[in-house]
Structures are given as structure tokens and as C-alpha cells.
Length: 281
Image (tube, rainbow, N blue to C red; front, side, top):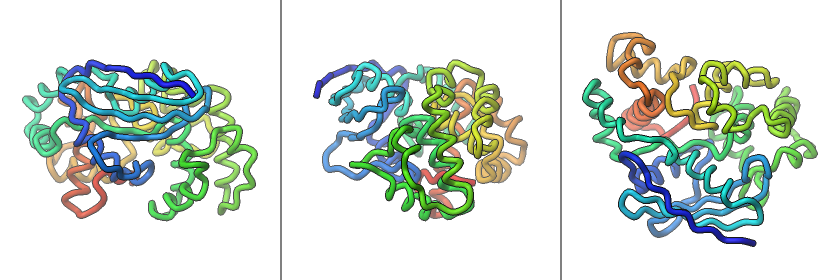
């Protein structure tokens, strides 16, 4: 097993403590709570599908990544930066607050938050299947039962499992696993596309509709600048706070529309007493 230490200069506001608190409450892919200040995670390196572990600490504007694993740790480091949004130049994020007082309030309430996503689009897609037509807590319990030594099964392993799940979920999970092996759910590829095109591409995977495809692109590939059109809770929040359509309001959020949407969802869940970063309709 190899080790790698990487220092990442984070551009723009960032707080590891705020991000860690966000992710620990992110039901679809919640981190286990650990003592100390570090954020720790174990995940599959996309493409290789080998395990890697990371401990992330913050030193001023620098993120320090301490990685270990049997695979390509440079790939693993890039993946960590992606699912923690450390790869996004956030220096203009405070300017959004100058254009939108609601986002200014959200930034003040969540100082330094960068949306944390799923480890990979593959895991986001699998979650979307598991969460169809059931409560989030039920989906989380099923996902936990599928974990192997704390990580979600690799696509080839998922294909080989005898899945005792209701309806067409086994079929859809196998389709997701096959798409991941074929490179159709690759994060780098999805991030290189315009978000609307990426969402359409993901919908070609059996079982993934518009809502699921948006989750895969916006929270799986962690694309920073896209508007979720199928999140009713976000639409309701915008209607209550702005009294105008989401498409119109979100123009002021460019080039961080995903970030702004996540901030508003967090504020809504806090106000309504839900989990800090619940995912769903």
C-alpha cells in the first residue's frame, strides 16, 4: 500500500469545518463522524475501482490531503478535490452575494461551504436507483447493507451480486454498473460537457430519469454551475424567498449556480427542521 501527501491551494473561500459538518449530515453518502479536525473518507478510485483512504486537513488557504491505497493516488487526489469542490476557482463566489442578498445571507450562515458531492457519478446513480419511491432513511439502510468494508461495491462486483430488491431496482442497478464500466458515468467526461448535455447523456442509462440525471451531474460529478430543474424543494424555496421563477433568479448566481442552489437547500432544511443536507425531492 502506497502513501501520498498533496497540498492544494484552494482559490476562494473555504472552510473544512463547515464542509465536514455538511457532509456528515448528507444522508445519501454521509461520512462517519470522527474525533479531531480532519475529514476522513474511504472510497473507490473512479475507473480503477480500487480502495483509497484520505485524511483532509486545512492550513489557511491550503488543503492538505494524506492518501493511502493500492491504486493511482494521483487520480485519487484529483477525485477528492472534485468531490470536495476544491478544484473550483471560488474567488468570484463572494461577488454573487453582492448581486443577491438572499445568497449573501446564505454565505454568512454557511461560511466557507463548498458543496460536497458523492464520491463518483457511479455512486450518485446507484443512490438514485435505491432512493426511488422509498423514504431516504430506507434507501440509506439498503445502501449500508451493500457496503463492503465501508465502501460501495465496485461496478463489476455490483453486477455479480444477487440483489434482493423490490421492483426493477436490481435491473436498474445492473444498468448503472454497466454504464460505469463503459465510461458513461465518468466524472471528468461529464464535467467537460455542458450540464444540460451531460444530464441528457446520463438519462440514456436505464432507470435514470431527469431528477436522477441531474443528481448524477450536479452532485456526482459536482458540476459547479448548473440549475437543478427537478428539485421541487429548491423551487419552493426560491418561490418563497424571491417570488420569481428559479430560471430568472439563478442568472445572478453564475458561475456558481449549483453552489447557490445547495446553499438554499441547506437553509430550507435547517428552517424546516430536516437534516442539514438532505437529498431528494
